[in-house]
Image (cartoon, rainbow, N blue to C red; front, side, top):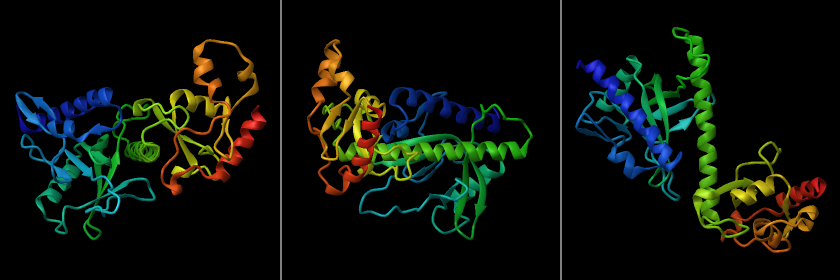
Length: 305
């Protein structure tokens, strides 16, 4: 096979493998499996390597770019960031625009080849986005501009540069929003020691980061003091004002639910919580639910009741 078709097939196989990994692990992928990669015609192709700009031996040009996870107390070596246009500004390798990795990404841009973008959410866990494209190069600031695409979008009209730009800007903005949601969830679950605040369920795959004041509220910021780690059942009950949390962190159930007679799930899963304090709260005072937020949300619960 010729080099160009071989490159395209490897990239397509990488995207298919990522799809299978997300079906198995969810949106956060373990670094172990990304480094292990997949087998393409008898050759192992890793999806990431020790450097941020990664080219597997099978290809002539980079396949993926990675932003390292933020470690508390330790600065990232490369400060990648999203700009006001929601597009990613990805730092060069080093400060030499002519470094082979930077030259490789420049050629990827010129040939309009798709990449995998891996954003480190926490050590050993990465949120992938693909296909990603290099859409700009700024040697003065030592950055490439990266956009995520959605080739299945309804408005994907071949040859329309305006449509392509709008589609990629939107897809990148959605990726940024998803990234913020994942990082918020991880911060909250870490503060609550991967346990539901109401029932102590200790299975992260069944836990959510629930806003106390919803994100549409003027003060509904995605910060740990405005959140509770809740299992799926208690998150749904909290969002729908079936139960509420008083400013002193005591749980209350809506009166009609207290009087309802049903099976053990209602009795043990909800009714038994009435009058009890939250079972799990963050150890750090700074991460605990802010009384002001609980008070305002409790009023909404009382009004809904």
